[in-house]
Length: 74
Image (tube, rainbow, N blue to C red; front, side, top):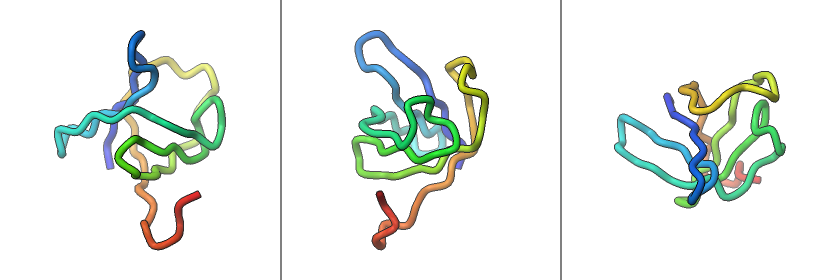
């Protein structure tokens, strides 16, 4: 799914999903740099992010893969 990751001074990192008109803060991540691991957002979704350079600038639109909720979450 296409998502936008952005940083705001008051909310920190968040994702925006245009097709669902959904914005949620990122509450946990596998790696501090985000890329190549999973992120968890406030609504409970866990998304796998692609490998990218650690200094990738935000905001950025990427393809993320939503994990199955049947025990595949970290």
